[in-house]
Length: 52
Image (cartoon, rainbow, N blue to C red; front, side):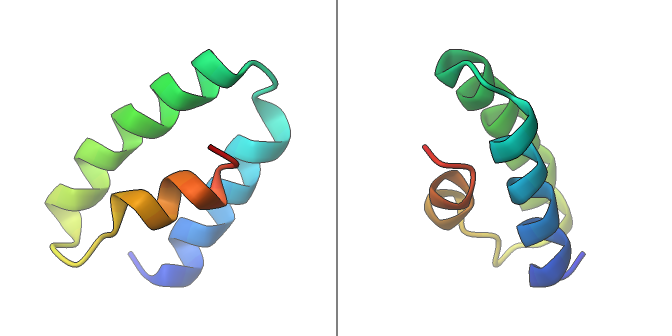
């Protein structure tokens, strides 16, 4: 996956998941997978893109 893919997913999470606690839980779960497929994945940057 590329940065562009991660950005699109984060944008979708930010737009579609209204409740902060649900958005955080979803983003956290996704981070585990993203880190496994891309060792350079930045969890903090993804959380910020998700609006967290």
